[in-house]
Image 1 (cartoon, helix red, strand yellow):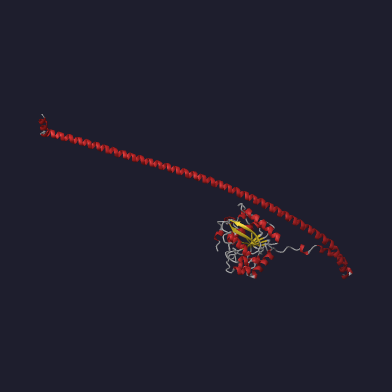
Image 2: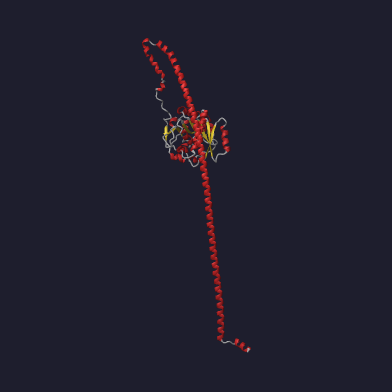
Length: 419
């Protein structure tokens, strides 16, 4: 029996052999198909996992971006709030400073008016006393003179003795006043927009900073009045401190005092800039006037009608010519003679003299005999304590320092003021 099965396995018919091979091949194909299906399923799973991972990363990135944007907006809002708070605090502080300065200015002006009223009242009383004294002395003088007149005249002319009554009124009262040299100066006009661009805040008076110049004006007038001075030099330790800016603003503030004549002279002959700040073309040569080659009436200019209601009591001496030997010219006796003649002819109450920086040249020291006191302009954030002390040392104890002005002017024509 066993031998029969072995025989059949060994001796299968061709049909059986083909069937067996076919079954085996189909089995292998099924296995291969199953493996292929499993591999495709695995690939799909991996692809889906990658897609899910990518979407997850994109979602996380989006969340991170939105979070960062929200944090940035929150920081910006916080910074804006801080800036707004700081700006409000600054405006409040400036308003308080302006109100305090205005109150101080009002107090100073009230005191000045009171002092002026007292002086005027005292002067009126003195005039009344003098007039009373003259009235009492006049009859005695006439009584002493008339008999002498009678003795020297014939008897027929005695009725004419009534004529001496005309002596009671001085001859000057009947004569017209002489021509005023100040009014005869050439007038110049200004562009209010140009002044605003150059931070001449005392023109339109819209910037609260003009109050500081009004306070400076009033204090300066008090100091000059107390000492009998009228010539003020304006300088700074170094360049870019704003001395010409200060001189221009102060002069316009002074011009609003109708009883004050102000003369502003640009004696910074190293780098003249006053004419650019004010906006005047063809300023001429200050040096030629100081040498006596040009008469003052042909060089000085008076502020004419203007849009900011400043009086015409301000005149300027501009300069458009650089003097290489400026220090020597300031020490030249002709300069002192010219300034004395100007003061005598035009009678300015205040003469402001714009000079170069004190630490760059010796012009300030050279011109010391030409002025009574000094205003020193200090650049905020630029001038050092050492520089201020050095200027004081160079000026010496004999030069009155009328005050120091802290200036923070920026973005004006003075930015081109170079040395």
